[in-house]
Length: 60
Image 1 (tube, rainbow, N blue to C red):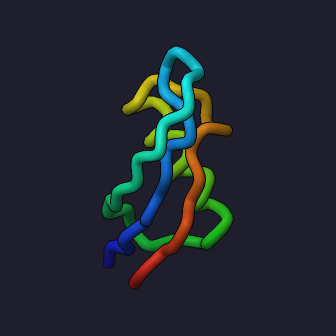
Image 2: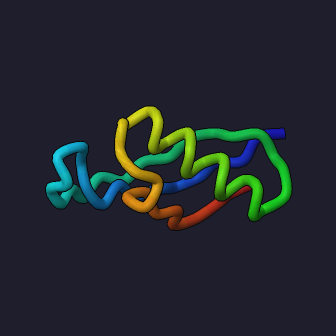
């Protein structure tokens, strides 16, 4: 089963403020593991530090 993770990007690769939000699907797992996995994958996709990714909501 997949969960939908709503996230927000707070800055781009240059470190400039950016207000982008979206949603992605990830496999269902322990909540803390899911948050870390989502942050690391999103940070790698956007080529930004993981601290620039904020998880706002997780849906089943």
